Every structure is written in C-alpha cells, then in structure tokens.
Amino acid sequence: MSKENILVVDDEKDIVELLQYNLEKEGYKISAALSGEQCLENVKNELPDLILLDLMLPEIDGLDVCKFLKNNPQTSHIPIVMLTAKGEETDIVLGLELGADDYITKPFKLRELLARVKAVLRRTKNNIPLSFKEKEIIKFNDLVINSIKHQVTIKDQPINLTSTEFKLLKFLASHPGKVFTRGQLLNQVWAEDSFIVDRAVDVHIRRLRQKLLTASDYIITIRGVGYRFKEEV
Image 1 (spheres, rainbow, N blue to C red):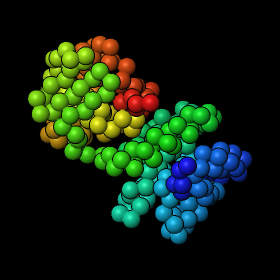
Image 2: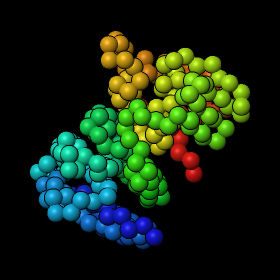
Image 3: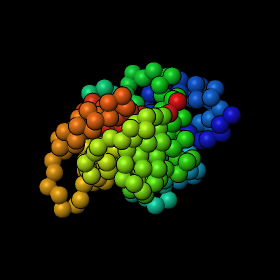
C-alpha cells in the first residue's frame, strides 16, 4: 500500500473529512489544513508528498499559497493539485502557470480524484521534469517518437510532421497526464524570439491531430485551459 503523505487544504470540514476517509482507505497518510495560513504552517513542519489545494481559502487564497510554495526552493518540488469550482477557468490557467501540477473541479467524483492523485504521484516518483530534456525514444501503444531520427511512426508507418508539430508532440508525450496551458506550450516549444499568439497552439494541435489519425485522441483538450497527453492505464 502507498504511504505517501498528502496534505488536504480546504475550509469546508465536510470535504476535508470526505477526502481524508477515502484517501486513507487507499493507503495514504493524510494531514489537513482549513486555511492558507495553516497550510503553510503545516508544510513548514513537515513536507508532504502532494498537496490537494482548494483555491477559495480564508486568510491566504490557494493561488497565493501555490505561488509561495513554487517560488520557494525547499517546497517547489511538491506537486500541487488544485481543487476549484467549475467556471473558474482564469484561476485554473493562473494556477497552472504558477506551477500547479493538475486540477480537479468541484463537485468532483471521488474515483476521478483518486486517479488524478495517483497519476501525479506516479509522475513525481518517476522524476519527470518540466523541461525539454525528454527521452530520445518515446513509445505509447502504437505511437513511436524517435528524436534521434526526428521521426514519428504509427503502426510502423511514418508520419510527416513539421518541426514545430514534432516538438509539440514530443513535449506533450514526455509529460503524460500533465496539463499544460497554451502559454506554457508556447514557452516550451516555440523559440523565445517568435511572435506567436496563444491561439496558434490550437491551430498546430488541430493539424497535429489530423496527421496522427488513429492516435489523435492521445492529445486531450482541457477546455478553457490547454492540453495534456493521455496516460497509459
């Protein structure tokens, strides 16, 4: 059973108790905080393996907590999964830009929440970095991305991609399950001196999907936020 320590931060005691009960059933050790200030105090005393962080908090809101933790070298490595009400797309984008690893909307389904928590912890355990130092060869089912040959194949059939499409696919596939905003993809894939707007990412994603054919559904749209690459089950 897993023994990772998860810090649940929410000002609603019912939600905290619900999450604590179900996460402990999965084998996690749970600590709780009912405010942003209490969260930071808890982290100061013991570094958790993951933080489930509500955005609407008293004293210090979740976005400020996320910013503080991600800007601190001692806590920047801690994965943060945001808990947010539906419709807060701006907050979701901002949270991801600040360094949050994933988000879950309220009201949430427990099965989905547990799966997302497990996936984020797995990525962290595998030390997948948020950088462009990806593997030379990435295999996902019938899709193979070969950086040495600068080639993509599906069922051993080569797919003709532009340089930008290749970089975009490779970056997403190197971080399966992690949500990226359009701004983050621009920073990672396009050159710094390129004058590209956020919506250009959508155009490249659309063209990339058209070329990927049967593998097009590996790239998942997160409405109002950005994109992520499918995780292997």
